[in-house]
Length: 347
Image 1 (cartoon, rainbow, N blue to C red):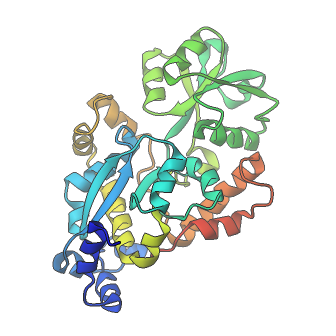
Image 2 (tube, rainbow, N blue to C red; image 1 turned 120 degrees about the horizontal axis):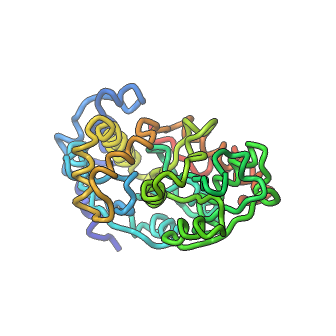
Image 3 (cartoon, one colour; image 1 turned 180 degrees about the vertical axis):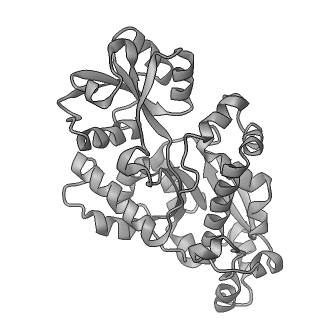
């Protein structure tokens, strides 16, 4: 059965698949994105009826501000897309299933959350990275934890044993000479209790997302100190959140997916140079953070890191090797073959 969504797309391509690909290849992708291989011109966006897309995101995640920017400033529309934003706060498996079955067209999420579920075979492809720097590790000064080496023999508070913070910093500590299983103890607390656990001496460090850790650090009046983030050291130029699309969509409408990626990359770069304006846009979608805090948080992100193509594949393979070494991915998984399977070259 053809859905309303499919009928709209069919109307867009009624000149035939070959004609669609030829016309959409330009895909409104203009300088500076020509340098990324997107091509030039604006023929598609000007001549064609906007393509409807259902895009899932978590509107409480400050690092996804550019998604709201792309919607509210018309970046999506200028690139030939009519994007509906769907706030999604369910499980990662459910989100990936929605993409694989076409209930949602595309989504954004943390690569650290997606690597293990994608190993099980969801028909979902990662097409671009958007930024780096969502997760941080804080030491508690009264417990004399002010640098990584101080963590040996200590406890770290996290929100879950399978959380991105626990997985990422397990790898990070191991690469910095600290055995994540023998040298530290991981303890689970609800986010609101992480600071209390430190003050009671139950943990000596905490790891989680911002803005939670930003708020804890600010309100502690200097009791917490940053030990590392997921863009520290060799991770400085590694992505954090990525765009995922259903396999059917990317195979059949590759230029549409390219336009989506181009739009979000443009929105991230715009945000980096229009921080106050971007913050005000995002505050239309969430009420859990103050304007001044939001603008300060943007400065902790790498808003200019957007791997696509081979660069994206290599980063996925890098993280897959990390997760294999940690025992999260199967021992028989080949990181390079895994990356080749889950990423899609949209250019």
